[in-house]
Every structure is written in C-alpha cells, then in structure tokens.
Length: 276
Image 1 (tube, rainbow, N blue to C red):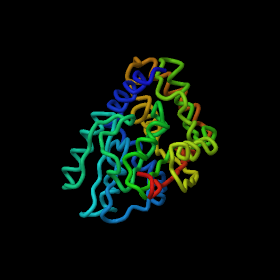
Image 2: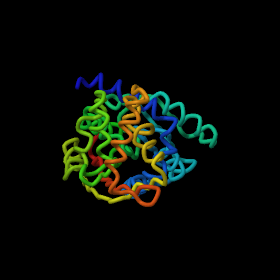
Image 3: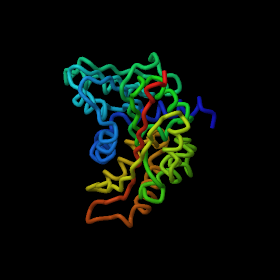
Image 4: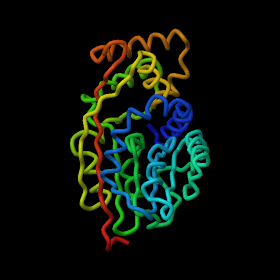
C-alpha cells in the first residue's frame, strides 16, 4: 500500500479508537510498558520522547520517572489521541510535558534533543519502521538510548484472527506486516541496521484478561487498530464479525470471560557517544 494512504488510515483509525483505548487496553498492556521501562532505565532529569504516545500511558509514567528536572515530549499521528493526552496532562498538572501530532518519518526536533526515546506498541504500525528508527536515533543525544516494544509472534497472539475477520468484509489496510517485527530477531536486526549499538531484546508471554464477551469484542473492534473499518460496518455485518471473532477465541474462554494469550518483544539500543 502507498505509505501516504496507510498513514491516513492509521490517523483516522486511531481517532476512532481514542475514546475506548484506555478502557479496553490500559490494563492489558501494562506488562509491555513495564518491560519497556525496565529496558529504558529512565533517570531523574532526563529528556524523554514518547513516539506513538496515544493517550499517554507511557508518557505519564516517564514524567514520574524523570521528575521535575526532566521533561517528556509525546508525538502521535492521531489528533484525538493528542487532544486526549493534553487534557490529562493538564488535569495532572504536568508542566514539563508537551504533546504534538507528528509523523514518525520526520520528527520536528533538532538532532540530539533527547536522552531516551520510547515507542510502545507503535512501531509495527509504521509503513517504514527502518526510517522511524533512524529518526529516533537522530534525535537522541550521543550516549542516549532507544527502547521499543511490539507484539510478538502471530502464533502466540490468540487475538490475531481479528485482522482477517475484518479484512474479509472491508479492506482495512491497518498493517499488512503487523507481526513482522515480533518475528524472530526482526526488531533487533532493524535497530542494528538503523545504527544502534549494544542492541538487546527480551520476549514476554502474557495473558489478556477479559471478564465478559462484550469486553473482548470491545477491545478487538472498538479500541484498537481496526476501529475505523469496524465503524463502516452496518449492524448485520458487525454481528457477523463479532460472532466470528468470538469463535476464534473460543479456546481461551474461562467461565464468563476470556484469557487470551499474547506476546511482547522489547528491544533497546544506544547511540554511541562518538556518534554526532
């Protein structure tokens, strides 16, 4: 797909998902965020950039980690996400934060602006993750580090059938290669090719816990990457798609709810001190 079109789909799709995202995903992706923060090892006083910041789940934790002497900037392609995180930052009284709608291809920051760059579950949506990683490295100060977490192997993510279920009804073009970076050493290899040094990675198996069928479907259709496509379905098609998805996760039914397996991969690398 032409990258410009894919970005537009991403933008309007996450606009649709913004209001439901925290409700359905905030608790589910906490293990990914912990993995990311362990890898990044943020310190008080540091300048942090959170790319694909969404509703600010990572940004706000980063602001707490770097304290009053540090600062956090967040970028996202979705205007609704950016407006949401700005409102919440104001409510929390976080003065040393800023949030802007921005394209991952060309970050509007000067070289060496940050001590750490984070990207939580965003990189796999970018049409050109290699370019995004090079931009992450460019805005890092020498000696700074970048950490990114993505979903892992498709076969280890029990919710993965959501993509073919939606695409069989309307072309969503969310991300044709969604699981690529979580496969094998792909994320590590991409970071190394972008010029990062001392790159390492960890995998984490997780369980997505939904107490009701409604919550499982809400996360899949309303709060995530297929929200735009789902919004175009009439009620008949929505019922059909939901029933097919529920059948796909039937092996993970637990009482009245679901325990769906997933996997995260985090990789962290540094910008060498002589790299200016």
